[in-house]
Image 1 (cartoon, helix red, strand yellow):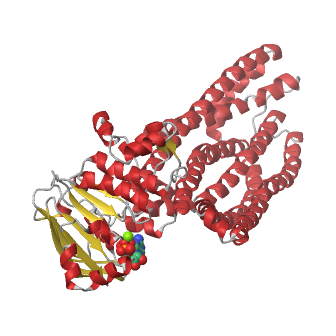
Image 2 (cartoon, rainbow, N blue to C red):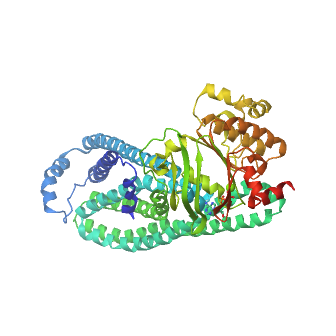
Image 3 (cartoon, rainbow, N blue to C red):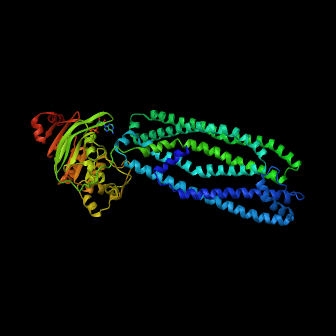
Length: 597
Ligand SMILES: Nc1ncnc2c1ncn2[C@@H]1O[C@H](COP(=O)(O)OP(=O)(O)O)[C@@H](O)[C@H]1O
Ligand SMILES: [Mg+2]
């Protein structure tokens, strides 16, 4: 499981030196802690119980015995009060060091984990940005947001607690083991016999917690989707009186979360009292054994005290280990999901090295095929657009018009056939350089939560160009009508603007870019005649000297284009100018009749 976490090193740079520093100070702090405990022995035997001498435990290993015997002899000679002074100075120093090391170890661990998590968040975001369209088609936005926020937080839990709350207590426990085993190994064996009994159920519980954690995550994802949909579609939900239906959906997931959390809490909560109780039962047997030893002169009271202090001190870190283990198990269910995003390969990858410098001759679709998950959309599309030409694309809804221009933008790759610009497959151009020269007004205008100005410039500053763009017909009127002009903030989905206004802004965005190639995807079809006229004017101003693809629903907008292609069932069924197609009296003619008869 832990190995799996460190797979993260394949994705981000891990700051090992911070970890090493943390571990270094952990060892020092564990050591200081053990040494500070040992002061109990002289304090007990020589200061508190005045008449006693320190008697080394009879079971103490020989090597240690030889080493500390002279020291014990000296301490035994010292007057109590003087010894007390020495002891206090010793204790204050060692406790200061212990605190300092504790601080430093946690500081380095946190630097290590926080850096790692910050990098993972950034990596996930960058990855999601880089993924191709098909990824987003499969994932709901709620799920994606949940994944970034919730899963990364779970990872946070793991990376933050693993060293300070898991490795540190393990080392600490180990140091207590060393202490008790040196004092009396028989008594120690007796006491640790209890520990597996205590720990077994705790480890068992870890597995169950992991499963519950996964269920909770899925439910959170679902709830995120329901909330997103409800906000996004609130008007439709109201109009169709679907509030109850949505509430039911929400309630189901919400209750699901409740049930699973409670079920998890029940298990998490039992761990701590259980370990404590079992520990207490074990100690009472030991007290008996130890007391008999002192009575028989096998060691002094101070050592028995030290034994118990060390033994009881183990309970807290062991408890911590158990809890953290449960937590880590639970959080580890987030890992595969995070990795699965990081491992997703974009289906559109950079293949070429050429920098596209702008259109010189023409754009050619050559026998292009495309399908979405087995559903054939385009079947052998071929046509050529010369530089500065305008081409109209017509066809029933769902025929693949948007998909066709998406291919040119490299949202997807053709399944078969090629798209050539100036005779070169577009795959050979760097994707950024290609998109640099294409302006795109999508079917659904997309506005970001920001000012009108930033929605047009998208952060590319060019004051002069911006001034030109906002002088254009339609756009100028729109900006003048807004309360704070170009600095008006528009909502996440442009709630404050009408469809036409949103579309105008996305057109202004495309014009501002000043591209060679322009794509309009039904930019005017959802508008009233008035707005359409205004937008058409804005579009007409833009089209001069540019190569453009105009997907149009209203055929009247295509009267002036150089060529129209008519799509049906994934293929081009007719091709020609508006007049030619009317004369032909075929599909286009029928559509025209339907709109204007
Ligand atoms: N991301 C997608 N995943 C699966 N199918 C899709 C996706 N986008 C579009 N389609 C399908 O491909 C077909 C063509 O869609 P589209 O190009 O948007 O048509 P048009 O723009 O002509 O209305 C439709 O049948 C649509 O359902
Ligand atoms: Mg479309």
